Image (cartoon, rainbow, N blue to C red; front, side):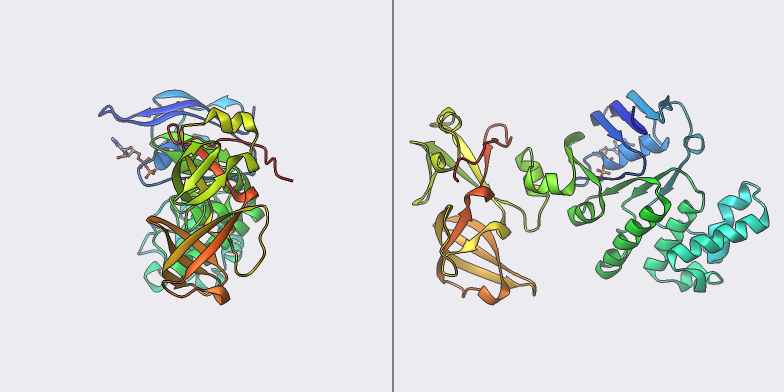
Length: 369
Ligand code: ADP
C-alpha cells in the first residue's frame, strides 16, 4: 500500500448531492499531487475529506496503511493552507508563525528556532516584527504557508492558495511553493482550477469533472496522451482545437480539406469508424505554416485569418476554415495579416482523434514512417 490510499471514496452531502464519485488514488511519500478541474467538480470536497474536515460518505482512506476515516484533522498529521490567508491581524508575523506551537506548549527556545528556520525558507526573516496589514498579498500568503510548514507534518493540503494574489505574485509563489516542497519533502496535495499551476507544479495531476476522476498522470502524460476530450481541452492554453467530421471512405472532409486517416492509422481502426462522426483534435502550437517550410507527413488545411493576438513569445491566430473556427499559435515573426489566406499543416504525430459519441480518445499507432 502507498503512503496515502484513497479507495472508492464518495461524498454525498446531507442535501443528497453526490459531489464525489468512486475516487481511487494511491499517493507515494513526498509526491506533489495537484487536483485540477473547473469550479464545482469536487476538488475541495475531496481535499476536505482527506483533511478530516468533511466526513467520507463511502470508501476508505488510509495513511501509512492505517484506516483513518474516523480520525480528526489533528490526529491525521496534516496541515492545510486555505485560499484566505486566515492570519491573526493583531499578531506579528513572528507570533502568527509561533501560535500553533505555543498552543501545543512547545518550549520558547524551540519555537524561536523553528520560527527562524521557517522564516528563512520563506524569505520572511526581515518581516517578523510586522503585522499582516503591513505585508503584501504574497508575503501574507507566505506566512500562511509558514504556519503550515512550521508544524513539521508529513502531509500538506493546499486549497487554491494563490487565488488571492495578482498574476505576477502567483508566478513567484508557484515556484516558491515548489521549492518549499523540495526542501521539506512533505507529501503535498494541491487544489487549483488553473491548469498552468497544475502543469508547472505537479509530479502527478488528477483531472476531475463533475465529481469523477477523468485521468491521473504526469503533466507530460496529460498533455501528450489525454484519454478524452475533456482532458485534451482542459490541459493546454489556448485549448486543443476540435473539429467534428464524418468518416467517408476512410477520410475526413474538413470543408474541402481532406484528412486521409489511412495515412496515419491502421485500416482496421479507420474502417471501424466508417460512416461515424469523429472529432479531429490538434493543438494550436503543434501546427506549422506551410509558407515557411515544406512540411511533409502532415495534413494541410486552408484557412483565412480573422484576428491575431501578439503575446510576445508567440501570436495566437484565429482562423476560419470556411465556417469552422480554430486557433493557431505561431512565432510572432510569422504573424499573418488579417484576412490573409494561408495554409497550415498538422504533422501526423500531432493528430488526435476522438469518438464523438463517447468523447474518448481513439488510440492508434502512427503508421506513417
Ligand atoms: P471545487 O472545489 O472543485 O470547486 P467543491 O468540492 O467545492 O468543488 O464542490 C463540489 C460540488 O459539491 C459543488 O457542486 C458544490 O456546490 C457542492 N457542495 C459543496 N459543499 C456542499 C454542501 N455543504 N452541501 C451540498 N453541496 C455542496
